[in-house]
Image (cartoon, rainbow, N blue to C red; front, side, top):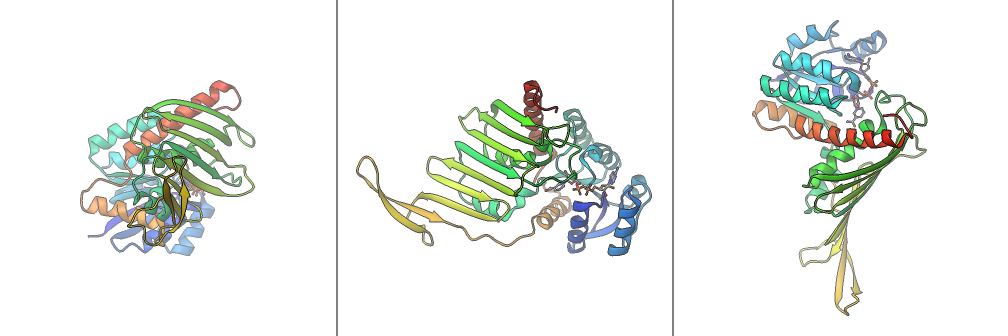
Length: 327
Ligand SMILES: NC(=O)c1ccc[n+]([C@@H]2O[C@H](COP(=O)([O-])OP(=O)(O)OC[C@H]3O[C@@H](n4cnc5c(N)ncnc54)[C@H](O)[C@@H]3O)[C@@H](O)[C@H]2O)c1
């Protein structure tokens, strides 16, 4: 049986979701809800899809809600779906406030439904290639830069962009956050548009993150430094580079010899793992459908979504304390 899906919010990202749902054999797109008449007309025309006049009417007809509305509407739409016992795919961040996040976690437990959060970078083929290598970083450097776009500015750059990297880092570093320092500036909006953050973990790992939505150029790079290797992940260009001591199994890598200060000969290998071409949005939606169909854990749970939000809000509190930008 196909999973009956309704899409809530058909703006910029919602249309990508619609395109992908149409290509997923185990899902049946039932209709959409969007309060904006102009956008709804366009979607009706382009996708030949039924528009529902209220979110309540659509939720009655589906098994799962795909929530792609602005972040400040995530809680109300999730609540509506979960209270009706429907599964939910909700775009990142899970919710706007931590209180909303906690309420959703309690509701999900009670309703016993599957909820997956749209932390799509987990499905980025460059990250998947990096994960094939054992990641145990002690130092992480991240740059996520974007040109200004009014979309997403209902929340700060931390909840809009940096949250992607917070989720990825929390999925790699298996240790609690010990300390956060942060600085941010609101340039075009009332909340931070650019921020730099240092997160120290209990295991000694330090992550230094920069996120900006007021840059001239786009960049989405994460560099991981660990005892035995450097791993570079380019989320935008979908490239991964691993530099490490050469082992016999490293067949396809470029290598060169160096002399260590102790006079030992070592061989350094530089590898660019083959990246599987993949549509990360489609992959995350397929993973959600499979989790529901097979009653298996989702790839990115509401707890994962909440933990990333929790760090994001600690960062915002630090920035607010500096008095530079509101949070
Ligand atoms: N995973 C990612 O990489 C990624 C990228 C972009 C956006 N997002 C997330 O997706 C969400 C939407 O972003 P967007 O860029 O598509 O925004 P958008 O402004 O282009 O689209 C939002 C749409 O939601 C509609 N809407 C408003 N209130 C609604 C409601 N109560 N119910 C249903 N629809 C409603 C709007 O009319 C609009 O059409 C945000 O939460 C954002 O954080 C995630």
